[in-house]
Length: 188
Image (cartoon, rainbow, N blue to C red; front, side, top):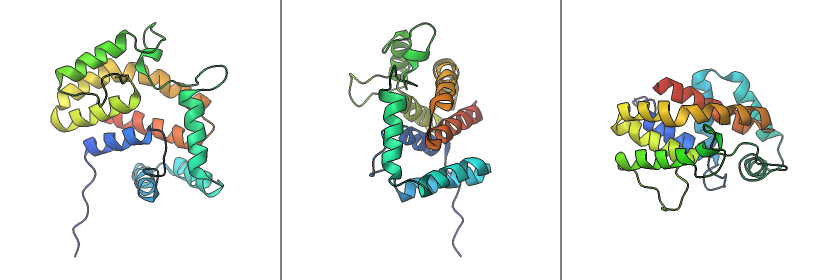
């Protein structure tokens, strides 16, 4: 008899959430990813969200392309402005620009915890890096993770999440930001 698989560790969940906010490619937005996403929704009993995603995928001529178009529209460029920039600086206390004071605070916190960006010129306050970092902290420094989520992530994420929920045309990003919200609240 096969041993039941254990639930994923919070570090793995945060890495999954970080991946879900990257630009979608066939390399990772595949059947395995889809299966994990649907299993999260099953476990949480988010039936409406699950059905919305299944319906969007079933009704799409090219689901990947639909999600790519939505990613670009929401997070890179839209007219007259980016709908939901995935950077803390844009949404933080009066910054409103890329690489504001909050980005420097985030980068400093990363350094204090031994986290280095892949490329030094990457913007440290992008949601993908913040979720990856939170995953590392979940494993190695839970108290540091709580401090990070409380002081640097949650304040801007709430604004970002509201914009995504308001602006998204595709259910994928609505579901993902709600999962991020759920799991960050779980950690706090």
